[in-house]
Length: 374
Image (cartoon, rainbow, N blue to C red; front, side, top):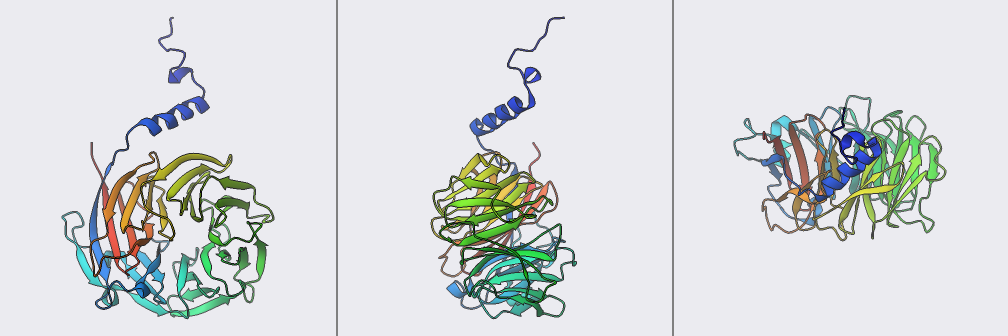
């Protein structure tokens, strides 16, 4: 029987060739937005709106994806129940406008400005880890509202990032302005170091660290030397992979899946990499980022990437295309000056999504998305 397939048809190609062709097709296909996003809630302060001291540097959902924690320059950790922020009907255009003091479920005052938060796995959302501007890593018991763990091993240099291992949740890591990543065990007094690595020869600041949330061995690190690194958590001596391609400081590295990461840089771009080959799959551009931390978050179920921008807009990219599929300017509150400094996706669902973003004016905004039916 005569074959109806041409030599270049998918049936006659090996899987690697098919994948290559698919990636090329995605690069040339115009980006399309398959989502309708709506602003559902806006949380601000009743006084001193827009002050620099209100900057929200980090937003994090708890493991149940029902509680939101925020922190930043104001030296406060606030927690919000998502269902208390959203209107009854989230898709009819209603916007809940709330005050931080009334909307938050708890507020913990901290001794220093905070740059990082991370929920500790395996403890039912009871413990929240933080890194601060004084170089201290702390854990807070949210039921008692008190610190229960503290380590100060970064020489007083700012801790930019904190994360926990999903495989062994008592093990955490912190990246600092001192140019090191320190891996520590919370069961030891003072958080005894399991490993210390210095990614950059010139001791450039470490801006981010993230364990593989899928349980793999790779630990991703971003540095001010324009590079991102991957370490094997079982043997943290030398990097097993180096990601080179950014033109300025790498501020964030996040896992998209077990073998793919996306990095953000103050060169104004995001890059998606295959970890095994340290190969750039795609570059994302459109947002403005030349000097500040503007947040980066991946909604793994939906393949969407969110980030902030220095022109006070929220950007959403579909991982398949290099241009944004949705852009929203922060609603004007107070002076309207500033930037979107933090973002976080809720990691649930497939046809509905939630993106929370915080600004340098202290305003928290909650966006809900619904997938279009074509």
